[in-house]
Image 1 (cartoon, rainbow, N blue to C red):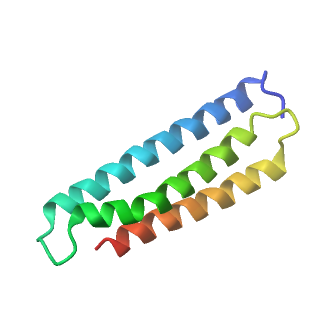
Image 2 (image 1 turned 60 degrees about the horizontal axis):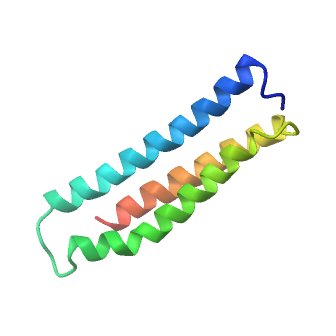
Length: 101
């Protein structure tokens, strides 16, 4: 993939910005939900520390896949892989949010 064209540079910046926005949104959702719910046997902080590694691993994998698109050899195959990675990332994200419920 040629990074000098405006379309590919915009796609790369958009991918990184989308990852950052999803990370911030997920973090806010987890902590707002943990603060708002009624206390049960498991404390919200314990739950957050249990789910954090899964979210960090999924986010790091999604970021690595997005940054791989900055190579000159990236093309349509990378775009399909990035789309599949975003589906996996969102599934893990919402799955961990549901487990926290």
